[in-house]
Length: 427
Image (cartoon, rainbow, N blue to C red):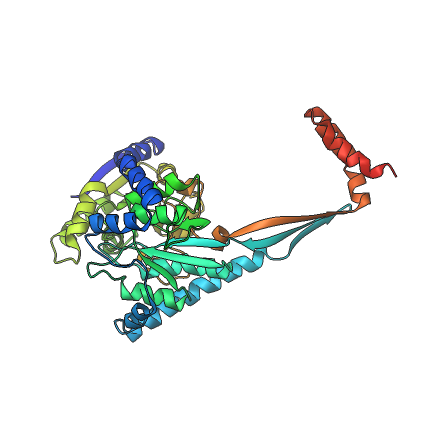
């Protein structure tokens, strides 16, 4: 059964919960995998694929024939759904990019233009394992495509038959991606960071993954840029006396079915709702629920109901948790949401479930977890571009800041800075 906690402070209880759900340290294992990939390249990739995925593969490269066969294994409705998801996300990313285009400031002979330059190459990690994630491929690839990234490489763990999930391959083909590799885990991250004979290294690694993937991304981040630490998934639902307990529990289940280490909870100030929620949870866990084993273990290990003394304490509690997804299922969701500053995405009202945002709302489902919402936002076109300042100064403009350069450069003990400026006014 899901545990109930009494929240009287907010910050303290949130810190305690996060400590209890701290991920195990597997750094030594991951460091060994990375070292092996650096030393042995493709041989290490096939070795660790056999060890962890229980699959022996002859080639990690997805060829053109495999792309063709993938289309034969998906339905027309699946194709339509992928296209819709792609179209909505693409629209939002292009809108964001347009807002950044043409930023020019000019004052007293100093002109600064911020030119948008894409990252040259990125590696997209698409999870596999017990579920398949073609939607994640779209979420990772589309912002990169909108940013005009030159090279996009996709890595994903193979299924038991040695192939990549066909719907994921179709999603890659829809996005125009030809470079797909049948490798996952820490070894895939190492290959993207350091390169092998088959996989060329990239400038940035993006995408969510399990424990080994996230540790590997952290370890290689001094060599290759990463987007964020993303995973396991998280959902917090703030509900009040007006909330439908069935909706609340169904939404919690929808995220809990991802994996046994899903972090999810319900926050409320209503004791009556707590009683209703417990009944709904008991009912659901005693039914023939799909993926019941995963949901049950996730609930037992990580889920909670937090009963807060006041709404103000609930706000403190949630902001300290900094959840990946926050649903606000209250009478006035907008008012409450305005007080939340750390959630990866905030979903307002009963018709905005996190389950929908995972697929087809046009928002990105690659989101910060493990409190990184305090400093990070969702994956977007911003992760694939650089704003390069192009500065043009006239003689008059340099004259206008001449005294400023003198005062600051001499104060910092760097007189040659001032001399470099002064030389321009000798003639």
